[in-house]
Image (cartoon, rainbow, N blue to C red; front, side):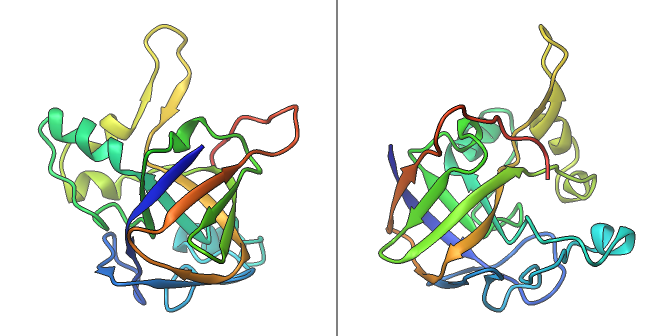
Length: 181
């Protein structure tokens, strides 16, 4: 399974959106250099308030570009970086990956998938009604469906740029489906 990095983003401040940039540098065990969410322990404010010593399983946020097309068809305009992702991908069904999948980004960087992003109500402040598009219940099964991307930790650092290839390395079976992190 292969895909492509479409854009990369980072922000040194707590902002909902992140500006796109020419490249990001991933630091092993920490996250995106210069990004407010980089660190060994949790950096998301709501999680820091609960327990600042918890390991940071949300170092790098990835979203698939195909979601933007789906949202566009439903009347929402979302551009790279708008949903706070660090890496926008194309060609890979990120939401179908099992926990523990390794994503090789470009020539050097490797991230390990830790789980699904749990979108917060701030997403409705960005665009009213958007939260229910990326977080809802399946009508048939009643299961919660999270579409706002996946989270990962950096296993091997390196520079990541738009246009870089992504190679998927699945973990050994049995595969564990992703849960929210």
